[in-house]
Amino acid sequence: MKLMWNERYSGDEYVYGIQPNIFFRKTIEDAKPGKILLPAEGEGRNAVFAANLGWDVQAFDYSSQAHEKAMDLCKSKNVSIKYLVHSIDEANYKKESFDMLAFIFAHNPNRQNQHRQLLNFLKPGGTVIIEAFSKKQINNNTGGPKNIDMLFSIDELKEDFSQLSELKVWEEEIVLDEGKFHSGNAAVVRLIGKK
Image (cartoon, rainbow, N blue to C red; front, side, top):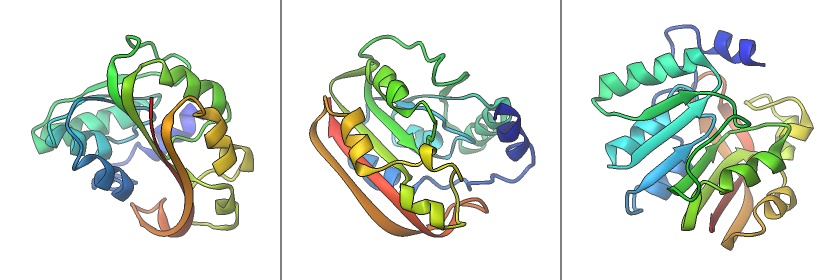
């Protein structure tokens, strides 16, 4: 899997674009900046946007190619982020140190354990946001895993994040325009909640 992602990110093109995910942008642009963690951040588009808003950004991905491109994007936008290369399972941040966790198309077969592990790094009162492909996306060719077990349902996310308050989870049909791998009509699931 790591080889596949390194190959995807190896060219000069930013395969998911350099603009932030729309749901991410709309959610954080009116929030008070703090410390944010972005798992599976890829080429850095969301991290750079958050840094431009004054957030203290930490991000990670297990693709070294993604890391290189994220650092190049930071340089071109004159912002600074901390970006490490490791898997979600290897995440080892200070407990309760982040004001926000943002999972933007962070799909993994070990979903539940990894979501709960990463929640340990969120401060009490901190916010979690998610946009991911729903299980209905299996019928589309507009992005996302082709393994239905790596796609999310409302009930799965409610279970994973049951300890959150003010929890809202819903599905939407949207039109993606995020580079060549996220393009067209898509079925997504979104989540916002407080720890």
